[in-house]
Amino acid sequence: MAELLPYAVSADSSRGRRFPEPFPAYRSEFQRDRDRIVHSTAFRRLEYKTQVFVNHEGDHFRTRLTHTLEVAQIARGIARALGLNEDLAEAISLAHDLGHTPFGHAGQDALNECMRDYGGFEHNLQSLRIVDKLEQRYASFDGLNLCFETREGILKHCSVATAGRLGDLGERFINRTQPSLEAQICNLADEIAYNNHDIDDGLRSGLLSFDQLKEVSLFERNWASVRDAYGAIDERRLVHETVRRMINALVCDLIDMTTSNISRCLPQTLDDVRQAGVLVGFSDEMDDAQQEMKRFLRKNLYQHHEVLRMTRKAQRIVADLFAAFLDDPRMLPPAYRSGDNQPRRVADYIAGMTDRYAMKEHRRLFAVGEI
Image 1 (cartoon, rainbow, N blue to C red):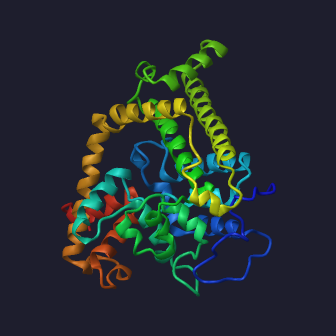
Image 2: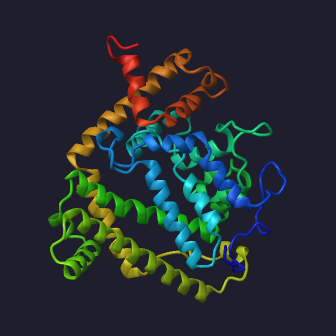
Image 3: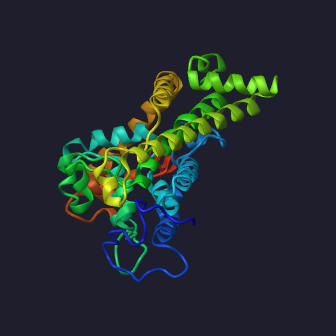
């Protein structure tokens, strides 16, 4: 790794782990975090969790796992260009969606509604709960015992009331300070990945068309440049060339604008970064283009009638499972029957399900003839 700039997170500036451990041989603390995340059960489950399209709808649509890998690749490249800690950016990216429910945001919304009287459900908090408690792999502690800065990056947003219960991890939400630049990068790398790749999946599925997407300035501009450069090429190459150019434009703009923001602010230490405003971001023009794309996807893909039909089914599956398990916890696996907060343990169980496992459990409980 190239030499880090003074305001990047380093092992020396880290607040460390909740349970002290010897320094790892032959790798950094944040490489150790990355490795623990990759070897976790929750990470493996991402392969069969929805991004937009339910897993069984097609082999080539993105899942939470492929999305996570794409975020990590984008975040690591940006961190390298800015002289920041690539390993930390990668670790945060790989963990950022561990707490997602089956069926994407539809599942999260349904589980949050089920948990309304029991503290609610939010996937960022669930990701933190997984790495702090639910993963049980190590003899000396629950969870993965990740570094403070990795855990901080996982928790992108949080209410002040909840922050007060999180100790030092929640302080920045109360004091209105910022996380590390590496954490800020991961937040926007997530947006870059899902916006552009949802366009790719939307076209692949037939739910979006080129004519519709020409209304989006960033797409139209890059689509036209591909046509000018290559003329008539097959559709898959045209889509890929256009999407990769959009990603490149967004990443380059973010690096340039962030470099300008840092030059204006002149942070000298990690604490300077925390006290500054948000430093990682797009130019005004590119931010407008990014917001336009998000509005387009919300209207034309996420609210497409075929997606909404699956959304409704997913919400019913989650709600039915929650009601059944809360009514009779004896139907839960033994590990989820203990503790003094049974609704939260039911939510842990459902949130950990893959799409196909949730559908299978639903059939077992509600379909006549299934066992």
